[in-house]
Every structure is written in structure tokens, then in C-alpha cells.
Image (cartoon, rainbow over all chains, first blue to last red):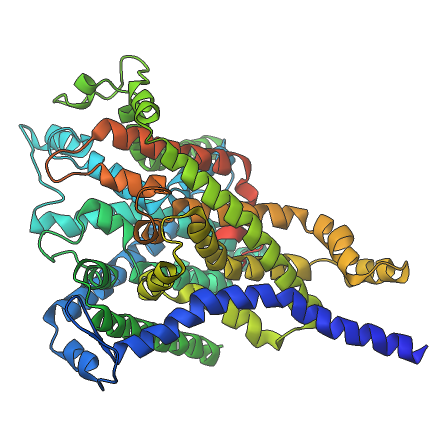
Length: 296
Length: 275
């Protein structure tokens, strides 16, 4: 009897590892192997002209320090994230408030609003290039109705307009994401507490800070984290709309890393860039998670 | 008087909601409109807001020139990789939930794989694919999408399997079922809503991918997203093709939001909102 039990336990011990083995294998193959390869390459000297596999020390990392284009692209990425994220959050919250109470055809309207979030960022970028076309696009036409006369704004070419154009596309695509998550969070806020606060005559701000915000905080944190990570690696939308242009004006870190690796074949240097990005992301995320744990 | 006031408020809210919906829908409408416009309507100033008739010649061109094959490539790579990722991820999730394999850390390590920006690992993967000679093949893209989606599937299915009562499995085992048949005959059927929802999202992630397809394909298995960006030329932009091809990419997604709305919250919030 006891040997039968221990036999089951033994076979289960093997079984549980068998079940998880394929997952761990593919993750090691596509996740960990590239990371190791990346670190190794970043200490070598491989480019279009060189193929030196010997240890080169930190030359590629030293080069990062003097690379103006790199820091500009990093700055673009951070500023873009810092602007797009709050806009999406606030718009998403306002939309969620609008849809929180009963509304005819609520489900249908929510489904329609969700569509942008589900489609490919490539398609979203294409759509906005068509929308913002200087001559045949509807946006300039609508502006012309208000401004009067002929409006020929070059949205994806002129330096003053390219970032707003990309921002419009990004906000259009991802506000529904925030909206949906916050709507779900808000509908779970305790109604009795809200009523009690109203009876006590609490101000709107107090109610929001003391009751609503703590209740939606966990979901909001996840939503912001997911979006921040996505925004930090933004590539597709910008690639379709400007390819980082004019010049390097809308180059983000992902686009710069792509250009370095696949256009200029600076293999070792682009590996150093990639490692820098992974390092920065890890540090930021760990810091953010720590802070949340502390504040709880 | 109070009644009347309430009616007003509702009307105002409905009006606002409708306006917002139109703002979010209009760009997709514009894409759809372009895909069925005649060249004259596309290149007219001021723009034509409502095409006079449904003109399918843009779609016809895609099918005649063979460009529509790229949609097929997307379908095959996304579809097959979804099946693989679902299988690998679900059994891994079962192991994590029922046997606490790797404790809490393994699950978190697996989901953290999704944090790394694709561009960072793209070049090493490209080199690996060159040496294995699977660049520009179905095998290559399917392998990549599978690996890329396994963390998501594992994480999501972990949540769904946790919700299945343990007693069910125990009684099945008392009845003499092996672990493997418990997994197939008890757990899988119980988790089928979760399986279905997760599979749809896995499919969407692969379907929407651009960067990996851009790097790992040349001509044989080019996906529709890569094809769309190719129509934006420096000299001329093929508007009708962009419209039609993008619409082919959007149509399955319209089906998704139409039919599985109640799963979407949980799917896109990585399980944070149970919905």
C-alpha cells in the first residue's frame, strides 16, 4: 500500500516536470539564449566591416556614452510615454465614467469603441496616415471647415506636426484599453460607501481620493504598467507613419535599435544598445513594483 | 420637474456616448470606405465621405496579383502557433497550479519574458534562424510566435485553472483516472471558456505582429502587416491596396469584438481584471 502511494508520488514528480518542460524549453530558446548571445556579442566587434570575435572590453558601451542619436531617441521615447500615458489614462477614466451608469445599447457601443485596441498597430498607423493625408485626408478637410479656405497641413512631414500626429494615432488606439479596464474597476467600487459619503456631504475630491481611487488602484496600476511597457517599445505605429523621420526626428529607441542592427549592421553596437534598454527596463520595473509593495 | 431633469441628463449622456463612439469608429470607417472606393473617389478633392457604390476592384487586385496570399500566411502562422502555444502553455499552467512547480517565482519569471522589447532579442534570433536555415519559412515564424505566446498562455491559463475546484479532480482520481486523463477529461472541459478566450488573444497577438515578420520573412511567408507597410512608397502610395489589405486584417477583429466582448477585459489585462 505504502509503496503504491510512494510510486504515485514518484511518477507525479516526473510528470509535473514533463508538463512544464516544453514551456521552459521554448522560453529558454527564444528568451534566454538571445539574451546571452546579446551580451556576448556586445563585448565583441562585429559590424558590416569587422568580424572580430575576440573580447573587446567595454568599447561598445563606451560608444553609447557619446552617441547623441541614441540619447535623443531615448529621450523621445520617454517624453512620448510621459505624454501619451496620462492622456490615455485621463480620457479612459472620463469615458469609463460616461459608460458607468445605465445606457441604451451600452454593450454595442463599448464593443465598437474597443475595436481600435484589437487591430494591429500597423493598421492603426496606416489608417491615420490616410486620415491625415494633406490633400485627400478628412482631417485637413474638417479643419478647413472651421478655419475656412484651404488647409494643407503636412502632418507626417512637418516637424511641428509629426509628434502630435503620432500621438493622435496612439491615443486613438489605446484609450479604449484604459477605458475598458477602468470601466471594469469602477463598476466594482462599493456603492454603499459612495452613498454614505454622499450623505456625509463629502466633496467630490474627497470621495474620489478616499473611496474610488483606493478601489480602482490595483487595476489602474496594472493598466499603467502594461501600457508603459508597450509605449516604451513603440515601433509599429511610428514605423508606418514616419519611419522615424523626418531625419531622426521621431526616432524612438526601438526604431534606432532596428536601424543600427538591420540597416547599418552594427551588430555589436546594437547589442550594447539592446542590453542598455533591457537593463533600464528591468531597473524601472523592479523599482516600480517595490514602491507599490512599500506603499501597500 | 425632477423626472424631466433626469430625462435630460440621460439624453445628454447618450449623446456624448454616441459622439465618442463615432470618434473611435470613424477612422475604421474611413479605411473601409477607401477599400471600396473607385480610384477617382480616393483621389478626389475635397474627399468623398460616402462612396457612391461598393466597388470591390481593390480586393480583386489583391487576389489577382497574389498579394492576398500574405493574409493566408498570417492565418497559417497565427493559427498553427496558437494551437502549439495553447498546448504547451496550458500543460505548463496545470503543472504550476496543481504541483506548485517552481513555486511562485517560476510563473512570474515566465510572464516577465513578455516585458523584453522584441527589438532587443530580434537580432540574435535572426542569427539563430540564419544558421538553422529557417528564415522566411512557415516553421520559423510558427516557432517564434509559439515561443512568444507561451508566457501569455501559461499566465492566463494559470488563472483559469486555479478557479477549478480541486475536489472534482480528486474524485476523478479516486475513480481510477490517471493524472493525464484527469487533465484531458476534467480540467480541459472545465476550463474551456478560458481556453477559448486565451486562444483568441494568442491568435490576435500573432496576427497583429509586424516586427518579427519584417525581420524573419523575405518573400515566401510575408504576412499581411509587412505587405501593408510595403505599399507606402517614397514615390507613390498605393491607397486602394492599403485600404483593402488593412481591411482584410481588420475583419477578423470585428468578429472578435462582436462575439467575445465579455472575455476581452480579462484577456487584455493579463488576468488582472476577472471580468
